[in-house]
Length: 234
Image (cartoon, rainbow, N blue to C red):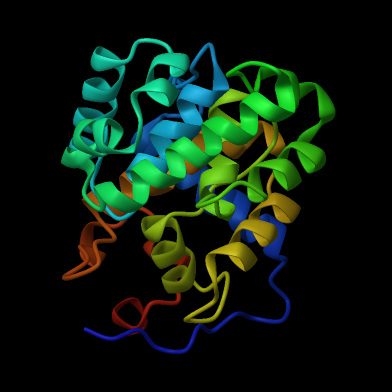
C-alpha cells in the first residue's frame, strides 16, 4: 500500500481541518479528557529518559532507565560512576556506548550551568529559551527537547515522533517526507496549546493501533473522512 500525493483543497482551513481531526481522535482515545501524567518532578530525569528512548521501544527505554536509577539513585552518583558503569546500566536501551557518553556529557554541562544536577530552573525562562538550551545539549534534537518541554516542564510544545509524522503525512497536513521539525512547527502554530498534550498522545495511540506503518486499518479509521491517504480515495 502506498500513499498518494495529499489532496488538500485550497478552500480548506488548515487549523480547522486539524481541529476536526483531533476532535474525532478524542472520541476514540480520550486523552484530552484524561491526559496522562508523565511529568517527572525533576525535568532532568525526563531528559535522560528521552535520550534513552532514541532508536528503541518504550519497554527497553524504561528497563534501562530503571536500571540506571536503581544503581545510581542520584545523578551525582551516575556522574561519579564513570563511563563504563553507566554504559553497562543503560545497555537494555541499545546504543549503550553512545547514550552513556551523551548522558555523562549532559550531566557535566548541567552541573556547570546550574550548579547542581537539575534543569528545573530552565522552565522559568519560557519555552523558547528552554528549547534553545535543550537543543544545545549533546544528543538532544527537536523531539527530545519538545518531550521535556511538554511533559516535564509543562510548557507548550508538540513533540513529533514517527507515528505522528506518519499520520500527519497520510492525512495530508504536510507532504510526504516532511521533516519532523517542520511538522512540529506546523502543529504548534495551528493547534490550540491546550490540546497539545492530549492531542499528541491521541495521535500516537491512533498511529500504533490503526494508522500502522504497514497495513493501516483504513476501513475502521475514525478519521477516514478527513484523510487524503490513497486507500480512502478509492
